Length: 81
Figure: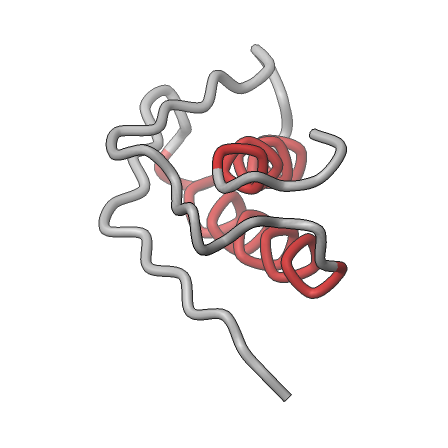
């Protein structure tokens, strides 16, 4: 069995209410783990430094976290993104 170790130095949540940050991060982690477990990413290539994800305005914490995870997954060569 092989594993993937992904290091994100900083996750900046501009515009996210302080009370929502923990929920955004939890949704981000869960969705990125799900996407990576499903496969289809060229993780050896790595994401470009300073990757920026623009999230939908007015998204709830869960949706914002999932959208950010999908953006990071796409940046590392995720399939179909």
